Image (cartoon, rainbow, N blue to C red; front, side, top):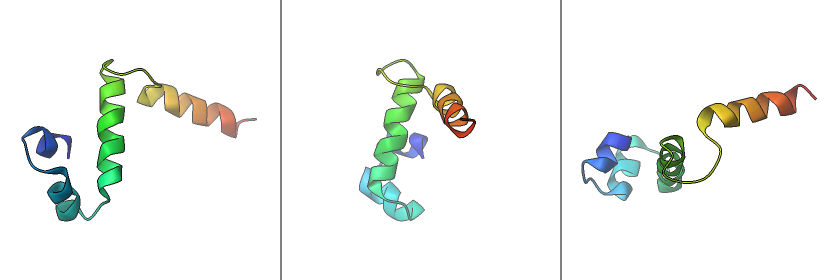
Length: 57
């Protein structure tokens, strides 16, 4: 999905083709930017650790 958007396809068309909401794609793109260190925030592994810690309490 990230490659489809990066190749220049419109996000709305990718969302339609994959039968998902455009907001989901925006969230995935943002998380990808965080994981690559381009935006501040919790990386995917950090988010997983956070969720696991919350479940164990």
